[in-house]
Image 1 (spheres, rainbow, N blue to C red):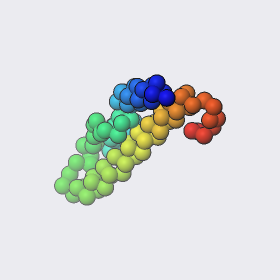
Image 2 (image 1 turned 45 degrees about the vertical axis):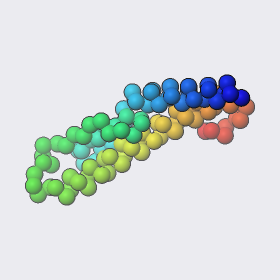
Image 3 (image 1 turned 90 degrees about the vertical axis):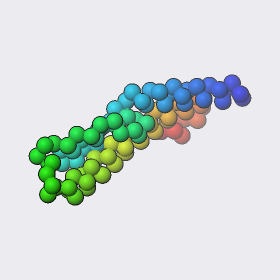
Image 4 (image 1 turned 90 degrees about the horizontal axis):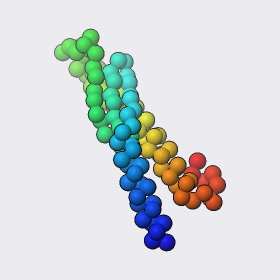
Length: 98
């Protein structure tokens, strides 16, 4: 039993390390947010044509949309990796983790 728990802990740590290396992108009207699959925002790109005093509220709204899209993509990748880990540890449970 403890061997399985240690194995699960090691696999989870391995997946977390792998998720650090996977990049996901969220975009909204040209604003691009890059995050890793651990849901850490790495980069924000705003096109020059949006950068003006008159666009402050629009940029803020678009940033929220782009960040949320990137984080949702990261969550999808993370869940898929965890399902894969659980499926490999407990193959007898069939499609429970799909």
